[in-house]
Amino acid sequence: MLTTATQLDPHQLAAEIKQQARRIGFDLVGIASAAPSRHRDYLRRWLDEGKAGGMHYLANRFEERADPAQYLPGARSVICVAMNYHVPLQPVPEGEAVHHARVARYSLGDDYHELMKRRLWKVSDWLRRAIPGAQTKACVDTAPVMERELAARAGVGWVGKNTCVIHPRVGSWLLLGEIFTTAELPLDEPLADHCGTCRRCIDACPTGAITAPYEMDARRCISYLTIEHPAPIPTEFHDALGPWLYGCDICQDVCPWNHKAPSSEDPALQPRFPTGTVDLRQLLSWRTGEPSPLTGSAIKRVKLPVLQRNAMIVQRTLACDTQGDAP
Image (cartoon, rainbow, N blue to C red; front, side):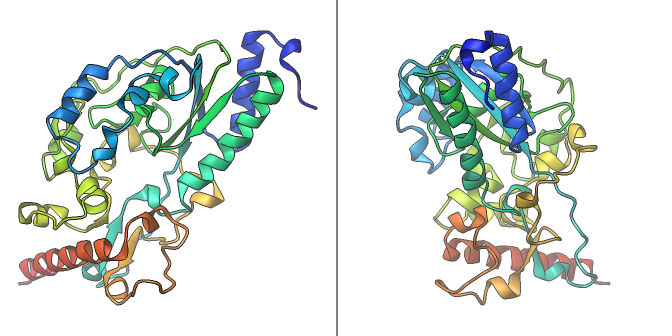
């Protein structure tokens, strides 16, 4: 039986919300204020300088993005959640590496948008039953909200130099989601930034997309180029793509906070490609409308012609690398 809000003080209510969230599969949960963003001016400048590339939708609904109370009128609190998506990968069979392209870890399991939305709705339903009259709005990734700032505000982690949210136990392998609510809930304390003097992510980025600590130029990011950029990828970035077909994990792979990251045990996040790679020969033979192993994953959000564009670049790069290694 659910306990009603009238039987709980605010701190007990917050504890129960977190318990409910963890019970249905969220690994981290914290509560943040729904106050306006402290990075509004930076976001406006970043957009005006064109660093979002072709992601013009980021400029849409700017006022909602910068102020949660514009997104949900009367919002007082934001319940921020995160799911660990780190999974161990098997090695590519010997001699096959030249035919296999990597995809970002977050896309290896089921589509997290749908998975997290369903779970957030369950928490939202519980909250509205517990607090009659409370309004909620759940969102994952595509909503006009500053989710990394909110996650940091809620103590889910700190925003690292690679612009990912990092938790000291889980690392940065985190899928983020939020529930905005008109209920006023006790707030959690933010975590301290523990990046220190480390700059491994900055030095490892092959395209120089991390232009300074905590600053990203999306136009240079492999994730942007392989997912969000529909036009031909500039030739200056072809070699830097290396084996990356969809997304990129380089700045996370090198992060010291990820070296001991726990593996997700969530069945929905287990990799449909155990090596974390896709066979380029198969991908280039697929035709639009045909069934593919990508069905049900986040990769399906990219149209096949874009994936095949990426595949042809990766195929040439891997072939050149192999020829360069030949005696």
